[in-house]
Length: 106
Image 1 (cartoon, rainbow, N blue to C red):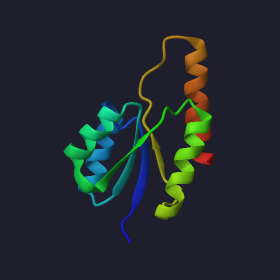
Image 2 (image 1 turned 90 degrees about the vertical axis):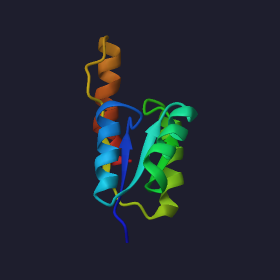
Image 3 (image 1 turned 180 degrees about the vertical axis):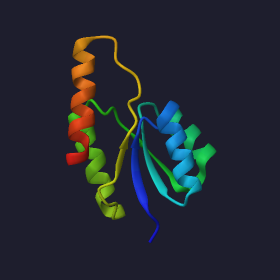
Image 4 (image 1 turned 30 degrees about the vertical axis):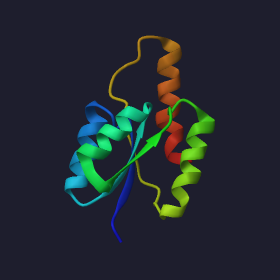
């Protein structure tokens, strides 16, 4: 069975680089994107080993729906959260912290 992983923020930066690297290493990558166009672009670029998941990681209901959609895939509990920069406001920093701390527990 091919190893699988969920990568948040797969559209750009560290998340994009991680998706490319893990696909090169034989993983099946499920990558979160906020825009359908980004998911389509990544699907074309990365091929069949990439499955876009369109949701915002700060939206708890959307996150739960994505988790439910992944269950039939047999995905284990591997998550790569790729938030790499410090958000500009304290409320966004708090939200980013909560996403990074709580997402692996879904």
